[in-house]
Image (cartoon, rainbow, N blue to C red):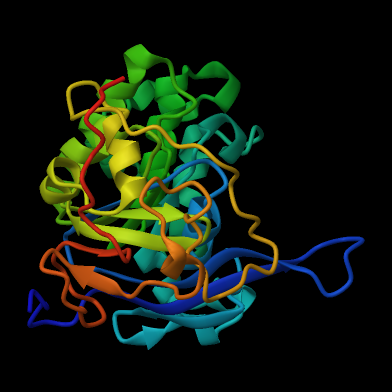
Amino acid sequence: MNISPTPPLLRVEGLSKRFALAGKKGALLHAVDDVSLHIEPGESLGLVGESGCGKSTLVRLLARLLDPSEGRIEFDGLDLATLPARRFARLPQRTLIQMVFQDPSDSLNPRYTARDTVTEPCLLLAGMNRSQADARADEVAQQVGLPAELMSRYPHQLSGGQKARVGIARALAVKPRLLILDEPTAALDVSVQAVVLQLLDRLRREMKLATLFVSHDLNVVRLLTDRVAVMYLGKIVETGPSASVFEQPSHPYTQALVSSIPGLGPRVRLSGEVSSPIDPPREVCRFASRCPAAQDICSRQYPASRDAQGQPVALHHSGHQSACHFAHWPLPAQAA
């Protein structure tokens, strides 16, 4: 059945987030819609999908920066979804989930030195005194390769790569069990991205951290994650071991994504209009309007998740699965 014998570190069930739209009375934008996923201790899960598919909203729900509309976020046995974000920020469990944000320049306080940035969560969240916080800051600075002389500098005195290391050190300072990485290198120069990604991968393995890695770079996700989840218009449409999903993508949308990577099969071209995320009908496949394999049933019944043999799978199944009536449809013969 490919179900873990031990409870996952993070278990998400039926998670949704809807936003009211100004000027449209009663209309709701379904940013995240009935998402279920899990992350095992020490596992790296990649999250991929086009811009606007709901990735950033999902990670902010998991980091408890947003309150969900419905669903469960069970972390280490505690349902975090029942706790308002402000209350969660005061709990000891807050230290166990940390986030590295997309742009270190925007996420660092310009009035704080690098040391202030790293010691603040130690003082406010982990209950350390000043001496303990300073010692911890020195420790994580060494782990992320941040020279001691840079700890007294302000963000405007640091390079992009150095600011990224400060952001990583801040997240690691309180010894989290789950690290959420939201496009952690997107704002960096290409020459710096590889160095930071290698650093994150090394730290994850050394510290046995679970990570949720969000990225537009499919090659990076393929190389640095254990499993991957593919998101489309608020829905998870395919999950599975990274090697399996990238080598044998099942959902037509995943096939189109993977085909954009040079050398990974013929190009799948999509046409049609993207469905609206505003009050979408639940019985319709969100991808049907662009799908080259769509048939009548796609507009009448939302597909259940099935494995490679076409059998329905249990919730939190760890094997390869996709939500498509016509999974594994033949790829088009023509290459781009």
